[in-house]
Image (cartoon, rainbow, N blue to C red; front, top):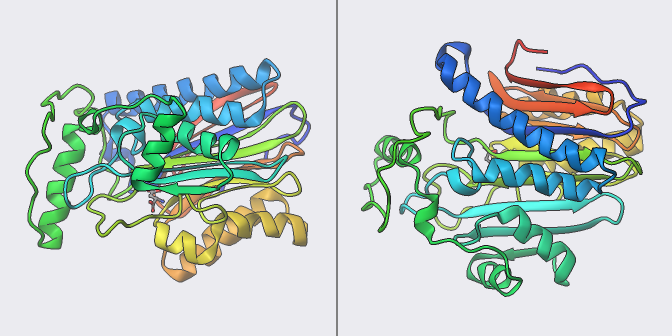
Amino acid sequence: MAATASDISAQWSLVLHGGSGVIDRADLKPDQDRAYRGVLAKAAEAGAAVLRAGGAAPDAVEAAIRILEDDPLFNAGRGAVFTADGRNELDAAIMDGATLEAGAVAGVTRVKNPISAARAVMERSPHVLLIGEGADAFAAAEGLARVDPSYFFVERRWRALERQLARDGLPIPARPAGASRDETHAALAHDEGKRGTVGVVARDVRADIAAGTSTGGTTGKRWGRVGDSPLIGAGTYADNRSAAVSGTGEGEYFIRLSVARAIAALVELKGLPLQAAVDQVIQRDLTALGGQGGVIAVTPDGQMAWSFNTSGMYRARIADGEPLAVAIYKDEP
Ligand code: ASP
């Protein structure tokens, strides 16, 4: 479903997503709908506050993503989905379109905010992607907040894992040590299928752009599976010559289509307007390959766009001189 391109004279702009999937109006009770919209709005406002004050695009991206990571409603940080063996393995990436610097982590289990670990990789390591224990050790050495893995236990996600493993005919692991039975928020969360991820793209007042994505991956993932989110060019990409893009959906498809980089290339090399570029890759290419998901994007000249081929995508957009718009279902503008 396409969104309209925005006023290209905007000074700064920010678009975010909180995951795509099967999200129909009938699925969400009014209090669930309100809860999701409330957090999406809070995250968008946090990013907007950075941009309004003249802050840099990567700062806005990180600030907004941290709010979504800290909220158990989304499959990132606190609310990350479970692997088949009952763990939470988190992935995140960030890219600075002004410098083409990028940082990412995959399979981390102890960093409270994986997006900040990705940022540290970008700014304070010579590398782009760190994985597993090494990535956790790097984040700890950088002084980033660490948590016990039980911090990521959310009852609702555990039940989603049990359902997924039953469908897959796999054994259900023991509940992790220290898992709380706290149902707060669990009642508000909606199971959007196996997925749901968060991402933010921003353009600052200097017309620099950045993108970030954070996820727990897919429910019941096995064998150290990593999706598109932490892979630069697949789920996350930013280049001042074209666009900043963050994706959500079936990572295996996004990786093979280099979705984020493909959109940037259509803008840079073919001169497509942003909305046409995101629609071509999502509505045409992703759909033709049989994949599901969506993207958000911005350009240095102030275009904003989103596109998804699922029934819903949690999303919000805000720009200088434009009111905040929050949407969930396909039929919303
Ligand atoms: N793209 C993510 C992954 O494949 C999941 C999602 O966006 O829902 O890990």
